Amino acid sequence: MLPEILLAGLKVINTIAALKALLSPIKLAQQKIALVPTMGALHKGHVSLIEIAKHHAEVIICSIFVNPTQFTDPKDLEKYPRPLEHDIEMLRAAGCDFVFMPSVKEMYPLPEEWHIDLGPAEFLLEGEFRKGHYQGVTQIVKKFFDAIQPDAAMFGQKDFQQVLMIRNMVVQFNLDIELISCPIIREEDGLAMSSRNIHLSEADRAHSLVLSKALNFVKENFNSFPIDELLDKAQAIIKEMEGVELDYFTIAHQDTLLPAVDKNEGNLVALVAAKVGQTRLIDNVLLF
Ligand code: AMP
Figure (tube, rainbow, N blue to C red):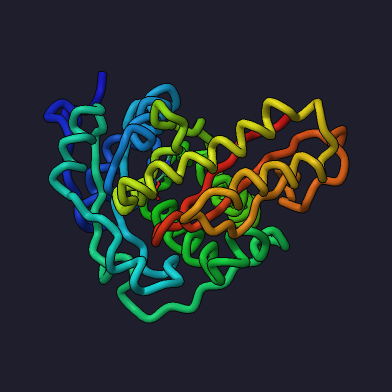
């Protein structure tokens, strides 16, 4: 039996104090809590995290917070979509129990210096293009973990490097939270769902397919070519597409993000980032 508080459906909470008060009887009843952190503008990818969370916990909390400390470009922060009513309806339909939507002041009441050693992978790939991004990400996720103390937290493989960085943070702080990496949900034509896709023009939307196409090429031809040839061919696929500016396409080790030299090294991942029109997109595919 769920505590009575949950029988009324989705609850919207804005403060840490209110959240703690609501969670206290749930913890006393020894119900498991799963957290799904998001920045809102929800789509089916986010909903899939909630569905997976239900297999790991009785109580699901989704946070919606556009975290300023993880943005390197103020314009990107400003134009980040915030369709709150739509999000709340999606969470209600998905059977989420709580949505935590704090203000910036609630999460950052005082000026704050944050630094954690996330290992050398922090500075590779996204870390190279978005300096300090993973400091901001781990800063806010740690605050959510402290406030909620969930049993499990769901993250999308879509943000592959983010999962790795949060895993490193959990190890650093010795946190007792199970991290679940959830599969990438795609549009029918292969584009990985993302809140940022809304910014793609019709032409960009068509051009964006080149990212999943190049990743698929690598996955399907993994046994046919050596790594350097796979990379050359995948990069060429992307570079030939008008309106797409490649930041990186790499085949790397899943644990270190260091470039793979030989296919037999195992546990590899192909990762791509590119600007499509004005919108920067990332995607990846696991290679075993
Ligand atoms: P965001 O709102 O972009 O910060 O994403 C919130 C969570 O949803 C992160 O853990 C993302 O990795 C995950 N996510 C975003 N897009 C997808 C997708 N297409 N499929 C699965 N998970 C996703």
